[in-house]
Image (tube, rainbow, N blue to C red):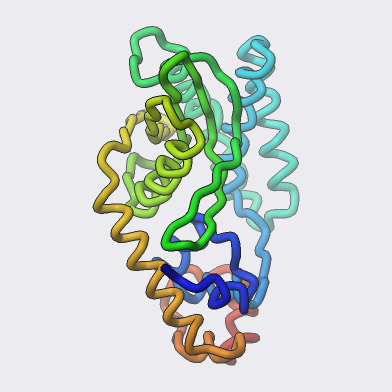
Length: 262
C-alpha cells in the first residue's frame, strides 16, 4: 500500500488513468500540468474526439434524427476550435468528422454487432476505485445495462487504427472500478476505435498483467514524489528532450523554458 500523504503533498489526489499514463509516457508533461498547474487549451484533434462523443450522446439521450446529431457535433467542434491558431489544421480535422461519426453511429446501432447489450443509461459516467490504497477517478464514455450485464464502450476517435498501450491500461482501471460499482452483474468493457474509414472493437478481457503494470507505474511515481519536497525538486529529476515534436506548440515551449530554463 502507498501512503496517500506522498501524493497529497503535491495535490495529486484523486489520481486518474490519464494522469498516471502521462507520468509513465511523458514525465515532462506530467510535471507541467499536474505539478506546476499549466492548463493548455485543447487542440483540434482533442476537440474532434469530444465532438463526436457529444453528437452521439445527444442522439442516445433524445432519439432525435441523425442529421440533428451531426449538427450538434459540428457546432461543438466549431465552438471548441475558434481560438486554435492554425485554422488550416482545424479545417482538415473538420473534414474527418462526418465519416467518423457515421461509422461510430452505425457500430452502436447495428443489429449485427453483438458486443453491445442492454439499453443506454449514461454517458461520461464517473467511476471510482483504489489501487494500492490510492483513490482513482475517471469517466467512461457510454454505458448500456441489461438485467445481468453492464456494457461499457469507450470511444477513441483517431486518424488511423492504433491500439495504444495507454488506452488499454485506462480501460483496465475502468473495468476494475465498474466491477466494484456493479456488484452482482457481469461487466464487459470495450474500446471502439474509429477512423474516417474503418473501425475496430477491442474487448478488454483478462487485465491481470495490465493491473500489475499500473501498480508498478504508481509505485514509481510515489517514489519520485516521496524524495521531493518542492515542485522544483521534481522538475530537477527530469530533463526535457528538445527534439520532441511536443515543443512545437509555443505555449508548451514557453512553459518548458519557465520551469527548466531551456
